[in-house]
Length: 485
Image (cartoon, rainbow, N blue to C red; front, side):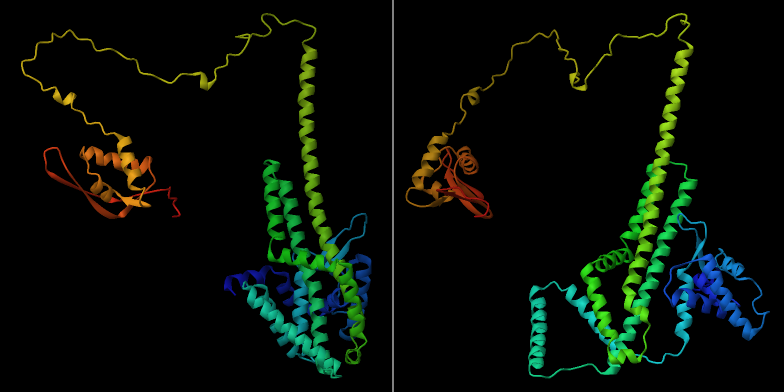
């Protein structure tokens, strides 16, 4: 906890203001008796004021008339003001009488005050078992190894089979009355906490609805930008962990089979002897119906948000259509005004009878102009003799002959290296013939070229000198080699 954050909460948080109020015993006891204990979400003003009058009358019997001098209606208005924020005052649709609902902050403060009292029974075993069960669910739900999950399921199956065999033998392991009471109290506490969670979730959606209304009232930009911002808020809440958990809870609760199963389980538990000794609240039998009612309140809040957005769109569409109709009507009125008199001069001027269309692809690419460089130069006879024999002594390598050499060498074997082929059929035209062999190895003939190994190829040139070339290992084969080979 941060110091500055706590200072801010002490000044502005309704729960803290309630705990610091001078009349907190009277306020908290009344709100708990009217809203929390019976799990009532909304109460009309007249009924709630009557309950507060009875509550104040009982206090006056002990404290005297001067303890709380204000009227019940004045106290309700004070608690629902923005300075307090302990009650929410609103008008349901179609009704003129205001209704009150307990805020989530006030409920948190009341629950904290209730937790201060010494509990008659503190159960630890059921909480420990809950911790183990939750940890096992997390581990089993995140295990990626199929073999490990199968082993865990087989282990559970063996435990279930052993328990079935034990029951068939007539041995039943029953819970102790203490264990039954402990688990029931934990269930009741969790069930009531769910109702508080619904009130907190409903408060979040109401805050979003209020923000949307404020944005719509003060928005001056385009409606697309506003809708994008609003839907971003809506998706942020819906896609959060809180929103996803609420959707899963709601889908599970709306299942008829789950409702019947929960009703049967509650009836069976309430009939147990250790549970009857606790004298539990009878409202626990219908706690799931309270969940449904609380969930419907949250769903109606979301529906109001959607309805607000739809009304905004309808209003904007009406405003835009009205503006368009005003423009059209203005054009018609001006046309009627000039119908009776012909304007002087040209009424309209068109530069061309048809637009000139020039497609980009019709334009030719730029070619620089060619200018011939013509000079008047006298060519003189050359005095030096130029040897022109090199023009007629070009070397031509016959590829057909080299291909024949390769095929003959491969008739008796499946592969042959270039060095072995040259050793059998010596090179006659020097380096040009060797380059032609390399060309055939890469284009015409099936061959493998290994760049990691080298070989020496020797031949004798036309002057009788020995020549050698170091080349990558070239192997001619009978068939084509793919990259996988």
